[in-house]
Image (cartoon, rainbow, N blue to C red; front, side, top):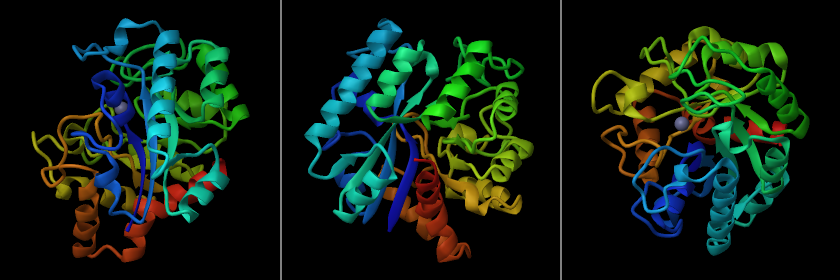
Length: 315
Ligand SMILES: [Zn+2]
């Protein structure tokens, strides 16, 4: 089976805890994804959170953080080039897949990492093709939903939206405040992504999308990746496949089957559905959906085809 995942923080974990993408105790490494005959992953460069990890990124300034993460990505991709190819566009993606390799794209989680246009350019040159305007807090561009859901984009944030559209970098509205989300919609007609967000109607959480927001993503033919973090799936401490399926079911009921993908949040959260120990177990989630009367074509669309088509339209 094929897997296209829009969001993981594995590279950040590799940096802070000196792990290798080939073989580690994280959610993603070579052996954990080798069962998928096509595997495409957006690897996020995460802006960083206060941690006690050996190489705690938050102690560095924005410039050094970006450099550290870009160097980490370069190092890991070069050490794993025999099975994982970094792609800059869909043409390179097709080549990687045709050679039987897994494909990696870079994204940024938290535009704190790109405080100036020069930083944005540097990230672009290194292959970054998707950027969340905020993480959970406030930066010079935007504010996270968890910090202040009513705060909109700043003047610099609106300019950043213009620059992302011009450079063909996909706008990612996951984490963004609701006000910021609608500011993006006013500023551009470009399709965008919520790389790892669920439905607020199914489980009330500020990180989840309202029906109106999801409908806007459908209207502009964007994409929404289902997040497997238990806190975003249900109010239970430990979630299950059942909880994840309820979000998919609701989004499909709004007419969003063609806009749904996966944004598993591997290595970015510490509490996943009880059935999932690593990326390898997504196979079990596909089987679970099939057992619950989802057509093979729907499962294939959500697990791979929708994201693959979107990337071919955008990059
Ligand atoms: Zn996140």
